[in-house]
Image (tube, rainbow, N blue to C red; front, side, top):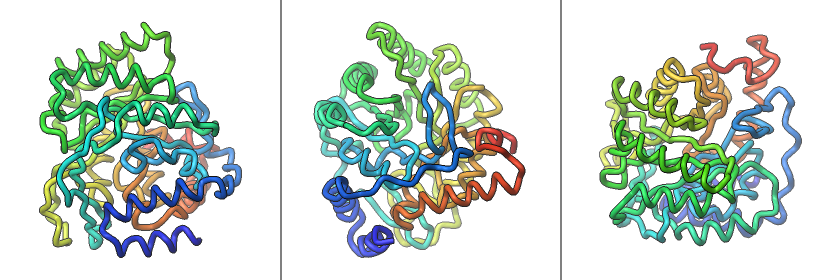
Length: 345
């Protein structure tokens, strides 16, 4: 596939330059990209009041400014999540801040929510003509005096333009942000957002994105808080600050969040743990690079699955391969549709 070949060429460039070039190319070629073939009906998922043609989504971080959600959907994703978007434009952390760990099929990033701000993202989302499912991932500015007010402002501006809203309180690259996962702060944040949704007469589902580095008591608290707040889902998980001893790449000690293959096991463990604690819909993220791994997330409790890092290594043809292999997994285990396999592991 020509796009997979282009992805291989781009890996010769510095990672952030390659990422910018990829987004720019997607924007340029979007009008000429063919629509993907219809998905096998067995991959259809009804969740969050939406109908997903397949359960494979593009995770936040690729399209930070909602520049190319429709173009990425044409590669066969069942949904695309844009962001993280903050109220004010933000340059992010100093460069270099994105590192390939090729030997480990991983990436470390300390981007720091670099984005053009909610007004720019809102303008792009408002111009969308495609009907694909697009979520928006929101965060707080690094210098915000009141971070909860930042989330409220971003929600008010962006929620009406998206199919769902993901609340990112788990990035390790904004100092203090992960503290919002603590019970009292989380109760306050989700209370504000659900109240704002009611005030604005919106129906967009709210999902919370959590870290993979949480201990058991924190998972218990999160399960209780999301149940009381009556939000619609959890995204499990963000990048990890852990550094497994198995890492081989020279840049493995760089600061930031680790994603890719080494994240698969810890993120799936947290996914399984949250499945045991809550009936809330779960989206599994972290280390997915094959149909078998997507299937493992589904069996661990995920109704939907997201990926990003593997796309950088394998190119957009990966999406079709995952869907094909996922069908083979369902057939092997005798499931009529993907929803039948959720949580059976």
